[in-house]
Length: 128
Image 1 (cartoon, one colour):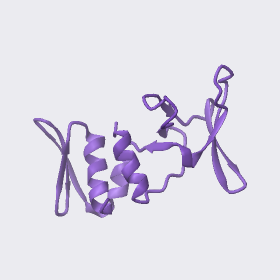
Image 2: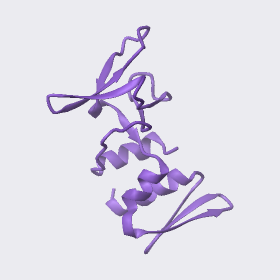
Image 3: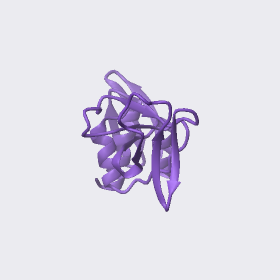
Image 4: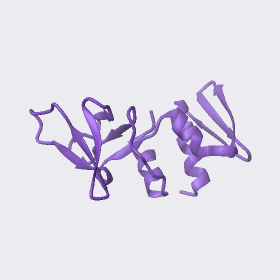
């Protein structure tokens, strides 16, 4: 999984998120940075209220959090989503002794986790 720092850099670089079932996210700065949530048709749904996306938490009566605006959470893209963001720049994913290497047209990016290597490559392409 990518780090919250990488996800924040992706968002700051302008990567847009259109939430769909299966997407992961975190709620930063609320003592829940370590909790990863998943958009689901049953428990975590995305609602569109007056042009603003709101993420609703269903069945969580014990929480003080019923919903939160999309702009307040940080998306943690999955491997295939990151690969899609690389588009035609992507050449290969390779295993290396210290993890994984993403090969682009003109650079390589190595990390202990494949998704982290993909995220580093996207961040590089966006100049972030």
